[in-house]
Image (cartoon, rainbow, N blue to C red; front, side, top):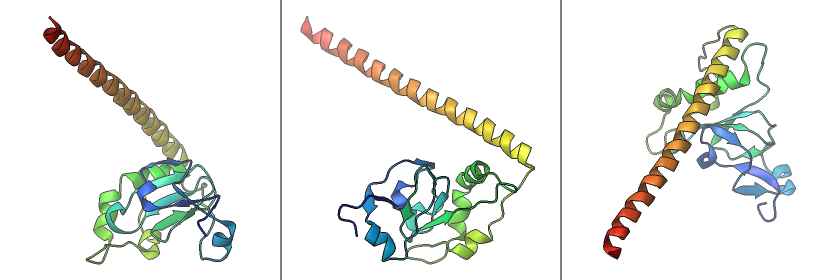
Length: 169
């Protein structure tokens, strides 16, 4: 079912609060047809249900399948909650979701816990405003990370040049 597959197969390790545009593994059409796997549409939200990655999320930027350690929120009723608002909210809830997990060796969430999880629902215009502000802040964070990385590289290069120039004399 994995040999020469073309259908994206998501594992919880790939859930990093980002949009998924590709996956490490793929399954075949036979794998999709002969198993309980479902193909989820672009825009669906994925949440890790087991172990160390509990509560990590992703949004599908492609149609994809998942392993059983993932829950997928699809057909979200956007007249009540905007998908991006729900996703942003869930990204803030990782620690709370971990506390709800049960089991000692490998804590788990289940569909019932997720179905009953309370989400604050401001009016849609407010949800849009929240999403817009969060996207601006996240964009600024990425800009600052890029600038910091460049500054670090420059500082290392200057330090090394200074050290090596000292010993060339």
